[in-house]
Amino acid sequence: MDPYQLTATQALTKLKDGSLTVEEYARSLLERIEKRDDDVQAWAYLNPEYVIQQAKQLDSLPPEERGPLHGVAVAVKDIMYTKDMPTQHNSPIYEGDDPKLDAASIITLRHAGALILGKSTTTEFASITTGPKTRNPHDTTRTPGGSSSGSAAAVGDFQAPIGLGTQTGGSTIRPGSFNGIYAFKPTWNSISREGLKVYSLILDTIGFFSRSVDDLQLLADVFELEDDVPPHNDFSIKGSKFAVLKTMVWPQAGPGTVAALDAGAKLLRDHGADVEEIELPPEFEKLPEWHGIVLRSDGRPTFLPEYRVSKDKLAGVLVGHVENEYQISRAAQLEAFDGIASLRPKIDEIAGKYAAILTPSVVDEAPVGRETTGSPAFNAIWTALHTPVTNIPGFKGENGLPVGLSLIAPRYHDRHLLEVSKVVGEIFEAEGGWTRQVYQ
Image 1 (cartoon, rainbow, N blue to C red):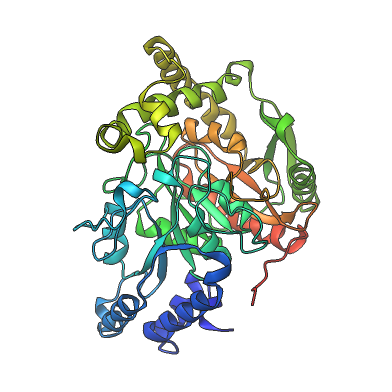
Image 2: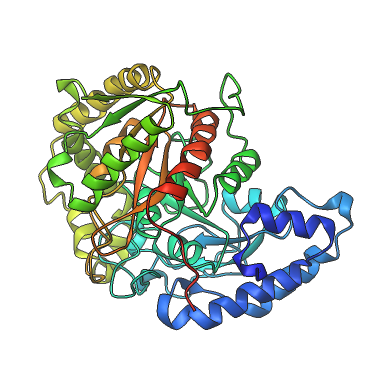
């Protein structure tokens, strides 16, 4: 196996035992990127000389000074400030902008010894649904999803073992599904968002991409995600109780998602789980509408500075936020804020009865073209409710492209959810019918 194919956990083992240097690892990843960049185009900025400079510096550290992510390469979504690299938000307003500081998340990663590989593409300000230049590595005629397009595509194409994204609607879970990888959205506000362009203070959450749950757990350690009660690390499907939840947007589900949800539930039952299909109470029906109100309302002050300075360079949908094109009243905002808040403890109570809730990640396979990054319909409600979510790969749609399923747990049960996701992921990947490939 070439070094670029290693998961972060596998790479760490080799870096620790001396069978691989950070420079060798970095050069292998850079060769992979060079080979595949014309097809996938996952990067907004990447400087190979700077990558090797970082790698040599990490190799020079004595063992006792090496961090828990020593040498692990990370793709960083280009809305997070990075010193020594531009942060451009895929916006002509910030083209070539060179911040002099790191975002809080990047400070944390550097302190842990991570190798910051480069800046990955995003939609404009991680907001609009028109895709960037990036293509889906499994079918380059299709979108990799958004807005964390580049991070997900880079991880899915073995150009990086780990990627950072964000989610305001479905920008971590949806591209995770489209690219056939694990994606994790922690409980809201578990990770500092200082130093990134925030779309909505009430919705925005930093998320992770990887090709293994072990790697998600590494990141959870570094960012100190903790449950009140530490989870058991011997979780077993047999005898555990799961819920299957189609949600109020189920009529939008395509054949790939319909088949995946049926197959996922069957696999859990085949492995000894008690699986119960449930429905949300009627009071949850307004969640999609309320999420939209919050998103557009928070967008008004967020993009006002760019509107004032460079309205002609701002995407029309963002101009619409500032100008309140939907005529959202303050009373409607309050109803949405308070309505969503009242539902959060209710979903905690429902989810707390199960090991996890199994629910769709996407409408279907990645759609053709990059005019849209796909619908966040199956993600937005969980973003609004602040629950942790994991996308589990393993299934495929009618065109053979990956379709994932989501696992949901109550708020601040992140480590529990990761333990469950690891066991479920092993089953879904082995028996779900879709196999990850290394494209040449």
